[in-house]
Length: 314
Image (cartoon, rainbow, N blue to C red; front, side, top):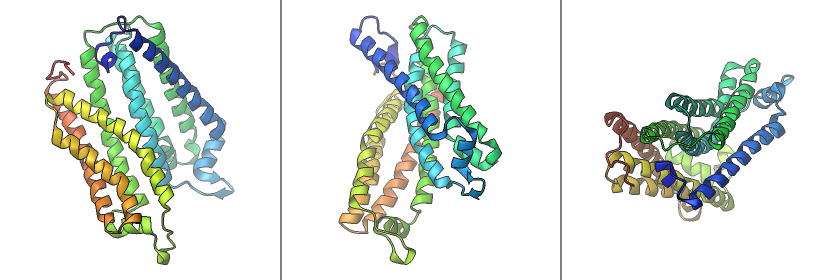
């Protein structure tokens, strides 16, 4: 966080060392993206088309729910990638306008690629090339951003705080998109009623719905704990930066509703179906709190003209 805020690494070998390895990990992430895309689609428009719409002779369109679920995961990864890579770009020797273009391009290309499946599904089979094009653009911008930080002269930019405010503003917009998508995924996958929530976990023989296994529910909960902790820590930290004072009630509520949302499925299976009420209410409250937090960040940054009330003291 120290580098993110000040851009100073000359007098701190551990931070310099960590950033070098961070860039290595980013390159491996980028290379992994290329390999995964190759294994899945072979860089072929036809393969992409068949994945989304099925073989032309036996058409079978992929469900929007599946696309949204994949986009939900990718959007989380994009948010973290955007924050980290944009922070590196701030302290490169690029001109301010070029930095803005790169940061905007990174965010926009990432969002477009995240929703490329849905876009192609809406437009039709003949637009399958869009996914390949958007993938290529997104990967190129990632590679260029990493290369720029490696090769360009470093700069402790006097406008660094302004750029950080701009990045936080964009992260808040991504968070609104993320929370909205969560809501639609839950509605599509489970349903927005207590009965539907209960049936999702306990099953319903009349609807040929099987009860969820406790192993599967624990695995899903477990895999969410660490990403949500990082995500909420980042969000509440940004709230503190723009608010001047740390809002304890909002922070506690965000973590509590997230925790209840993650573990209430286990309670439904192990204890009583009445916990379906807890699951539904905690989920809805959590999404509302995410939207409220982002709205507060956006409102404060606009009213403060992208300055921080605590003058950068963390």
